[in-house]
Amino acid sequence: MWAIFYPIGEPFRLSFFLSMITLPGLIDPHVHLREPGATHKEDWDSGTAAALAGGFTLVLAMPNTQPPVTDGDTLDQVLDAARHKARCDYAQYLGAGQHNPDTLVPLASRSAGLKMYLDQTYGDLRLDDMGLWLAHFAAWPRGMPIVAHAEGRTLAAVILLSALYDRPVHLAHISRREEILLIRAAKQRGMKITCEVTPHHLFLTQDDLSGGRGEVRPRLATAADRDALWANLEVIDCFATDHAPHTLAEKDAPNPPPGFPGLETALPLFLTAVCDGRLTLEDLLRRMVTNPRRIFNLPEQPESWIEVMPDESWEIRAENTFTRCAWTPFEGWQARGRLSRVVLRGREVFRQGQILSPMGTGKNIR
Ligand SMILES: [Zn+2]
Image 1 (spheres, rainbow, N blue to C red):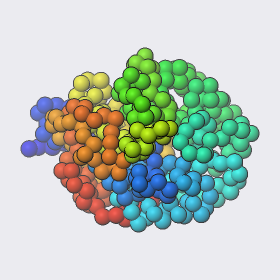
Image 2 (image 1 turned 90 degrees about the vertical axis):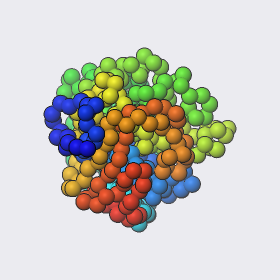
Image 3 (image 1 turned 135 degrees about the horizontal axis):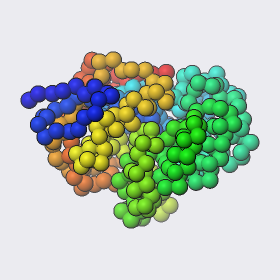
């Protein structure tokens, strides 16, 4: 067996002749770890185990927990849970609420960034009043990231705010043709926006899942939308999982909550796309390592890497995952390329399906 270390910046394709390749640890800027408030779905223990099992060594956690992370007390509560339980590195977003534009400011440097929910989502953090959008844009420290959940026309509105306030905005989980074309046009005009797309919007359409199991926000879209995302790959800055676990009992009940788990299926789906020639390994690493690191101003993780068997074929099965929600929308999919080992800051933390890092080994990178 021989291995190569993949240097970012050089074109490379998976080869049949390589039995193992080494890549940088992946970064997911959009995960929901459900603690506090819904630890039967996930917590900092199971969610960061799922991250490692998916090749992610650093995750940024969203604030729509119960209670939501909108002040110093809730931030302290979440970071305390993370300090005791996290198995990979992390940072925690703050949520833009109705009464907190100014009180968030002194907390900003301890956070991953500000999350603004401008459209329908899971939880109570939606901001309908545009006056509040302005207040948050005016108050939040320049140099700290803003992430917006904005769909359709709301997306156009938040791009305008980015221009008016002359500050970067990262647009979460873009899913539709009209949206990616709008972002392309805005980038061509030099606007300071970046965007992410989820694996489920790149690999699934509204025809693939039915009932509660297909519920996700933004909704799964048409094949034409999915194809437009692939056709505009150069406009997509990051692949983010939007890992949003709910149990199958919840998904199959009346009023199913929206969201899919995604941490453990993203890398195999994208490696398979590399194998199929839809993506290069460089495309993957730019969107899962270099761009998120730059956009969110994240530190390098020294002595950290992942090892992948590029030619291993296997079947995605929820029973082999670490997420507490115990299902995946990709059940039974054939994948090519499998994670075999993860090293985080010099320590072996995952090997051949086993999590080796104890709880509490993850570091808050802020
Ligand atoms: Zn989300």
